Length: 421
Image (tube, rainbow, N blue to C red; front, side):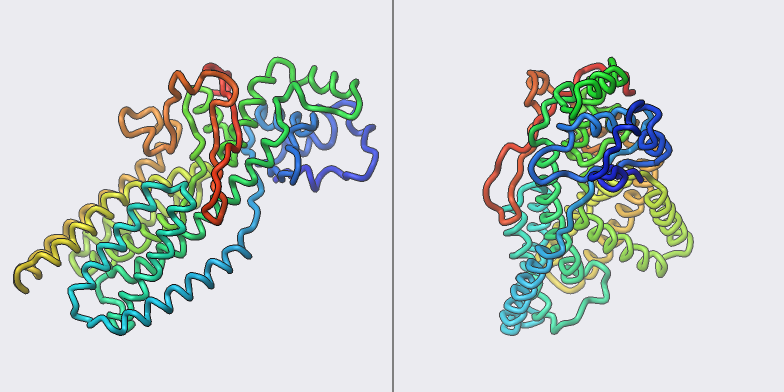
């Protein structure tokens, strides 16, 4: 990986090395790298400096992946974890007064699933997810205490899912807030490649001469990087064809936790149902895992986000399952309902696994052009006429980690036509 903050000696005179930018040792090293890591400054965008713009030009020219160095959220996460532990403890204390056989446990399960649905409907709302996570952890404590601190033998136990989902969703919330701050730093003061500054005017003239007619494409790449946290050939191509890819990098660990709990649960059940069914499931699951590991950064985010969206059907199934359990008139009907719904769950997850494999093999670029569902699965949308009104059309909204204010974060204008495809 190339990282200019480490590669360029900031305190030394390197003007002699830059006399010919395209043949400088820095350009040669960048061309040989597989990815470029961008480290945002605190007060002004690095792309106000012409050499950083030239590095973006080289990345576009060579088809190199560019990504933003992620700021750590460890300290904020530790504080949130401690608050969550306190809420869980209070919930456990309340659950002592709820009998294990109480019908209230069905209500708690439905509420937990409802909170998960809300977090998916508003994935970028820090305030909504803050409330969802706090309530979810607290209700999980109540439910777990009422169950006498045991997890059901069924892989669909709501307590096990909640213990995975809500902490992961809190991490997603904090990660998103930090990513938006990093994007703001990349945007601050950036007015386009042509406005970037150099210490010596002759250097600027020479570098701009080498960038030449590709200035609009370099601007596109930088805008994609600001909006998504990464700039890859696929994202640049889709953005050039009018796709809004602001959420292309959205990878939610909460959805991964949901999928893991569901897939592992169904996989274990399939072992006891039929050997062929188990082979069919696990071969698909392992193939999907291998594709995720082998994929590039943006494709990995695409695969995981697509898996999370396929789990929407599983979320609906779980709500129907718990409502049906609550409404069963007697034990016989309850047993029949559980048997039928668990087999339906297996079918849904089998389909989701192999659909995930198909999507992973197809790739984001091809999936985005599939009618009706392509944009939904590819984490994008087609630009409308209003989106092309001019500079300032792609506006990122930042909600701080405490769930407070919302502010305009960045704007980018991507032309309709580009040679990046």
